[in-house]
Image 1 (spheres, rainbow, N blue to C red):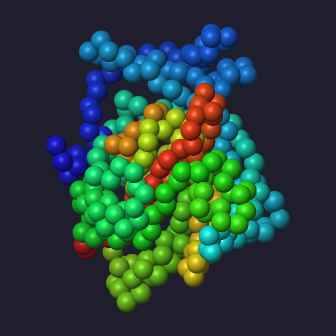
Image 2: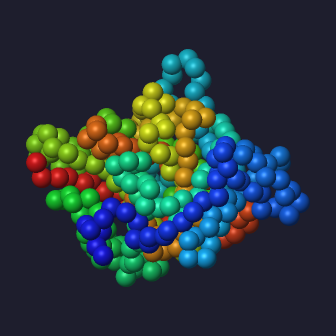
Length: 331
């Protein structure tokens, strides 16, 4: 099966979920709790499991996580978010944020229900010849080629242009390391979208200055290809379903990287945001994150953020790579 055959996740599972009249039955996995709740937090407990039965007699035990996600702390005075500067080996990120509680839903076994056009993200099974991601030249040649072909196969796009990538191996609080903190780049634990609608066109015009006037007339997207380098337990990545996030919750925020001046989105908190992740992602588990789509009839962007799973906070630092791509289509 090729990705062009279907936009669905490769593994197909027939499953029956234990449901109650009020929704999925959430059972706390902690030995000292043992409480069952209906889509609620256990008192003082941070991780919950939804038990899912598979028709063939096997089982997938979902690992939903009650945690906090960091949102922009809007001062309420109309002031724009503090600009971010990336360059000379350092990133500054001094925007105030506030933590809000959410349950992040584990999609394991249900990956095919979430697509780029329906939710703004999609999980794929895709192996790579690259394993360590320590050779920059190999990443920019062989791995970029793999990523370009993957996106063409998944989306049917005629053209994929990779404009940068980020390898993350550092600690959770890497932003606070000061000078040269980019050498220890770690997970981003703040809800965001890499490009706003304005920022997406700024990026397109930066990458294709002589072609942009024509390219903006057709459909174009910005999609991140996010892959674990090692199996992930600590600081997994969560994505919010686009239908749960109205544009009114998004605020344009200036971001300058070297000589490129762009705009991303920070996010106002809303309890209606619906967050998802896949537990125990492995290197062959690839997450496609849509940051922008010029087609207004489909999901146009997906919030994303790393988050803490309290069951795994003491694991080794997460290792991952994300490749950022402009995706264009023939008229």
